[in-house]
Picture 1 (cartoon, rainbow, N blue to C red):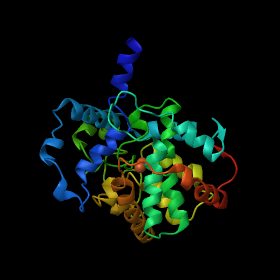
Picture 2 (picture 1 turned 180 degrees about the vertical axis):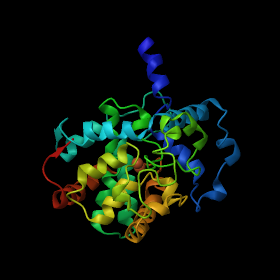
Picture 3 (picture 1 turned 60 degrees about the vertical axis):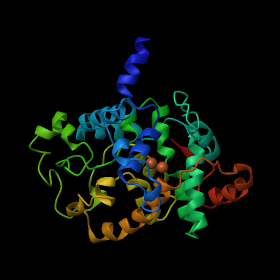
Picture 4 (picture 1 turned 120 degrees about the vertical axis):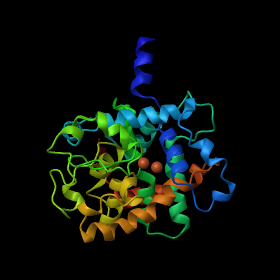
Length: 293
Ligand SMILES: [Fe+2]
Ligand SMILES: [Fe+2]
């Protein structure tokens, strides 16, 4: 019981999906706005449901320090935890089923398939379909024991001032880096226009899946994977001062990808049996037989 209490304190969300539902409230689908229920009610962070989202952001902002990220990078970017085929990896990821939520939550593979199928239906290149299928594979970090705030949540740079455009930015006051003169200026440890490749991002599922797949997919796909939760930039444009013109060009692909991630959720599960042969060929075209996690 004590364990359970500790675990809700560390992991306030009912499921990782709760963060994505909150994103949807913050950035509603422009095509669906007329059907939107009372948005103000949905964004009331004092309701018990939303209070857990607020607590989640508090933990994320308090704990994502520069040193924390370096420590996680050293731990995970060795990829010495497991070796799995792609399909074993999807089975593994699907253990992240949420039994505390009675809603019609689809499993992880279904969100990934809805994203990839939405991309495919609009005739985008096959590597982008594959990117849709894989973009949340980094959520396996939860199964390696990482708390929710080190897996999901909007991503942002560490090592420089936290932008006030970040959701619940008031919670950064509790982060030790907030008072560290090395890290709390506009540029911090970075140079103007240094390029995002030289910028350390928060630790989470985006950075992890980028490193997992960086040898196999085109650069546009890698930007989509690495920055798909970087809402403070792709929606709020709060970090353009760290980007090169090439980054800005590549962010057109991140912008293209985002609506497929955010707005493709539907209660109808894709017909995996019918789709499987297509995805088996696609995976075989780009990826090795085994991936190291
Ligand atoms: Fe994601
Ligand atoms: Fe996603």
